[in-house]
Image 1 (cartoon, protein in one colour):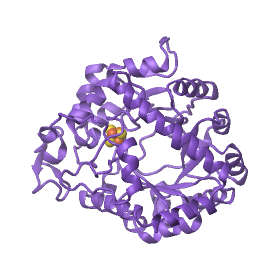
Image 2 (cartoon, helix red, strand yellow):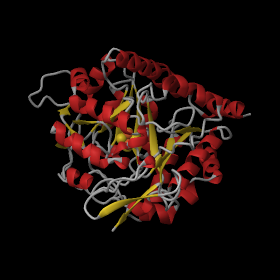
Image 3 (cartoon, helix red, strand yellow):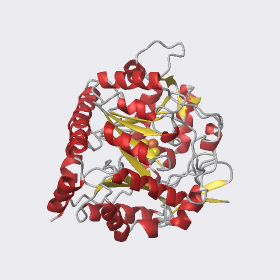
Image 4 (tube, rainbow, N blue to C red):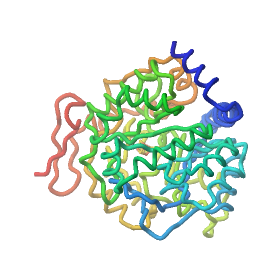
Length: 441
Ligand code: SF4
């Protein structure tokens, strides 16, 4: 039944030219890029198949807990730099690029960037406010781009979470403009205590389907940056509820649901640890992922004449990050062991790649907490297609083999303390309460 309903939607609700671009550029060429990545890793060579590029730091919103320096002087990765970056990545077989911000549609050349590479596929993480009818029509003409528009709650919650009135209605207008012009459109939500009861529901998924949204992505809010809003964090029980919901809805609703943290058997993974993706910030710094704001290399020359491929494959800092993450936990090393990440940053002399220049002190003051790793509570995929796709294209690629995380990962640890005056208290079992609850003495 699910298969029929999904096939019906794809056939009746999509523009076939855009569907073909999606299937060929992302489905076929994107899959091949992952297979190349796996074979490169076996040869000890590294280049991530999915690059996420923050093309601008500026944003029109001020969301709670955002870690991007949105209020600092605007910095962008301009068209020539993007063309160079994409061309070098294409030479390694890449075809997919995530465009992030800030707000990517504030970049004056975003449409020229996607139009310059019709053989690639772009996913733009956006609040939707700048997607006018004209922009949507141009996205449709390009055909190789999908906006992933973030909705953070109902009108009241969304406006509060994103720091302005009218945010929710402007976001809905952006979604409607995309749908009116038959653009492949997704909606994402950063799940937090404030929105989980409204948006992690069948009613919301049904509403997205009725609107014509093709896919959705439920992230889990991660407390990072200078204004981390720890009160928004989900409890481990809520995180498992989110995973169960995604697995259930994937087997039931004709909408694609993305996640980035579990293999087909429901085992946790980190997409920076298995190397499937890395991040480039608006200043061109190469980082393991958007919340690890430290770097040794840049996409810009800056006196370093190496190719992009050489920078990625020769980077001792990136290699050290992946290796440490693989040894430490199947979850998120940043959340679980900021102390080990800090040691790595110091050891490699990695620079703080933020504009605010306080990333190291923020890391030092982080309280270790658990992440997507819930050993003993794995929830395998029910949907055959997701299970099959993950088996070949999205899993840990063997990077955790031989590592015993029981001495290092948060769910197992009586952590020695996250700083002066803080000590750890083990909770019963691995996942009750906040898994490992740290209490100030
Ligand atoms: S380090 Fe954490 S936030 Fe970054 S990719 Fe891995 S799991 Fe995600």
